[in-house]
Image (cartoon, rainbow, N blue to C red):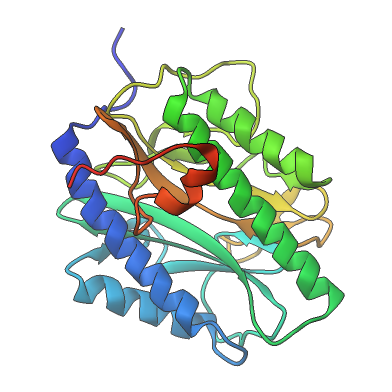
Length: 274
């Protein structure tokens, strides 16, 4: 039976690492620029300039009907927020998603951040929510390192989130394969499914991206036809990395150190192909 997705060679994965590092560089520049008063459109311009200066193409702009480099989702917007002239305020929970294509290979990554300058209880709660989401991402990556079937990732993500509180896990929006295009098979769920998923083999490259809410997981799409917002107005958080299982182990392609620091608590050492 023919596979529904392409397994990458080690050389393919090395090329994906280039795109992954450029994606990480763009997100790092955005993160450094987050402050009260900056607009998400300004952050978008920073990301695009970084990617183009690095010899890449903002792959979000290759999605039909989307004209920006990042998605910038604020507070009750979870994902797919369109950059605008809205100025960030201290304490806002901002999620930024971004990707770069270099020489036909793709990277995709996201982070959430609480805009500095607010020490209120709400800001603290938002930081905790972001930390939970980030922790679930790394729990999923750690599971992928030794998984035999792909839904072991979703189980690990869900278990981490549920152990931290009554957060909602988006059901309609999930992770995906990545490679020559930004979105490929297989589907990467952030929760346990009846189907254990495809066999995990060397060459499988995926984007793991948990999306959680502070309340119910039900969402709707705003009138802009992109922004996904919670039905109950609760805050959303989103973290993502592109990850490869290769002939020698696991490699987080969109993390500068390949995942070394964040995987160390799990007893896992990522293996670079450089």
